Length: 98
Image 1 (cartoon, rainbow, N blue to C red):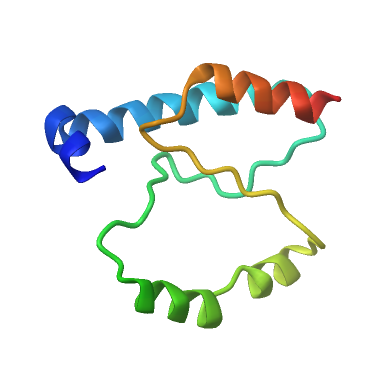
Image 2: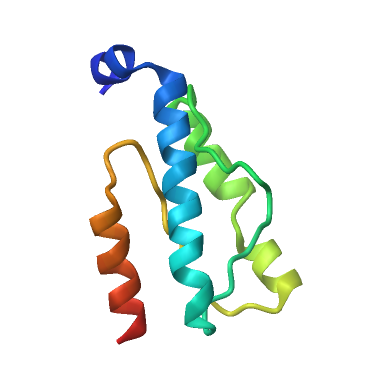
C-alpha cells in the first residue's frame, strides 16, 4: 500500500478520494431515505495511527455518544479510499435502493 501511494502521490490519492466522495453524495442525495451525517467539505481518513491508538479511540471515542445525541439508533458507515471505484459506489447505491 505504501509503495502504491508513493508512486501515485498522496495528494493525487486525496484528490481522487474527494472526487469519489462528491460522486457518492450525488448518488445518495436523490434516494431521499439516506441522511448523510456530517457536512465537512473534505472528509479524510486518519493516517499514521498505531493499532494501540486506534483501539483506544474505539473504546474512548466511539460513535455511540454522538448517535445518542442525534437520536439515531444505528448508522451505516461507508468508507472510501484510493482503491474504490465508481462502479462499487453504483453497486452500493443500487443495493440501498433495493
